[in-house]
Image (cartoon, rainbow over all chains, first blue to last red; front, side, top):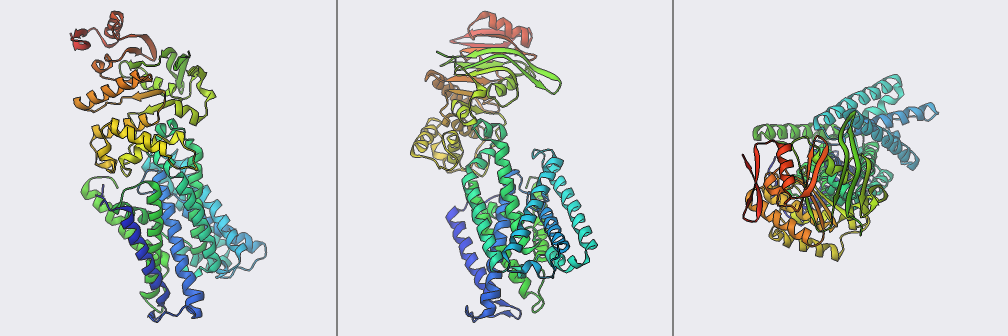
Length: 339
Length: 253
């Protein structure tokens, strides 16, 4: 196990807030020609494009960080994250099915369809992503026969992710008009985020945050083992279902607005745990903050690394997050311990 | 007055196999009862069935009422549980873990009350762990961790306390502290039922329930010579029970 430094929650919170302010300012200044330090909020480019994009990236990252913290606490597994449990793939399939159904119903699917400001589109895509994510997690749990066996759970998540990913590819290949929309979706793209997307993500973040806050002590009790949790009067199955629903909702909302963004849900809670050990309430709030900061940083890098060309942020988080996971596995191997 | 906890004709099945056979046992107020028996005798299964953590047929009566008539929270307020398999969350501080014992008394939309803090404080002091309150569980030794988990179970403030192998891996000083706590708890009028492998420790209890092959062979006072014969019968004739000073001691014959 990685040795955790024992920082105080207020120290980590202060650092998170400071980093949030820094990345938000950097996000507002990062343009197609690198950083533009003369920040003018009345500039339409800053106000209408960079501001919603930066806020949206933070909110999507926060949702993924919160979702990852929930997954890791619920499954008592530091490797659990929305990706590895198949929920992100389920959400993607849900979105692609919704887009295909929309097209069959006569809607024109332009590449920027999900960047449309229409709330009805946002809600529809988010709803479809939620159903997909929820069904994918249930399928993973069924295949793994519960959450007791970590390896089985992760393998089931990988299998579900691959199978649902294949269905998404099949659907996209059979409906060529979906290709442009799905391509930017599968690569992950915060450029699609606008004001209505930010509003939707903020609402869901508040709802899931409230769920995490009120259910936190119950989740802590579940950490003492299922028998002990039951003996404390907890109804374990409804509690798990509620938390899974919150996790699926957070993942689905982020995925529906920004596409597939890998590893934020895995890395954010782990970074927090490496600095602090505390109750789930504190860990989830800080994981959300860390997720927001990480995705904002990745978004800024995606914009400036090869400016004026923009890199897909999902690809960047996959490379950076995958590298981090490889490093963790190496550290675990050397230490001969668990994650 | 109703018996705090009673099993009447209790049966438990694991798939096609019957693992508990028609168990009748009662556990009185102010009494510490120890369930003993060889490995696989069904001790933990009995304890789990009494706690309502396993599906069973027959009846478990809690304060004279069928266990099934209690809501999960009401049952939790009546009966505390401490398992040998408590997966302690390394992230939580000692105080947070003990506070979890107050969950049955809290509504999900409410936080801990001043009274909850008062009870937790009393349990921390009773177990002499108040100085570690801010330490995370991951930094404690096995024996220290067991003290914290016992404090968590005591914080429930339930009339009945069920414990499954609560001193497994504990050294002698920790066993001695545990013994003192359990005796005090029983003297205060609580019902204590524990499963123990250590027969010497088990013979410190007021009552013993001897189990073998999923059946209760005998329930009696620890002082009863017939019970000592029963122990020899169940564990093998190589045991001998002796009186040393004021307590019973089991030695290899």
